Image (cartoon, rainbow, N blue to C red; front, side):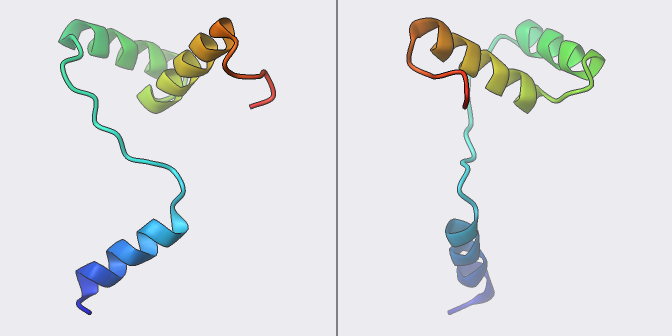
Length: 66
């Protein structure tokens, strides 16, 4: 087994999150979200997770303790 295959296997066994690519988001929306996240002391990831949680809580698909 080569080094790359070993590294990939280790990542798959230890990393439980995911890496997601979302395409075709309007550039202005991304830029404003990045600026807002920075002002709030967070990251675009933090903002995206909060938005997804709020949406799912509003729809009743997610409980508040998650």
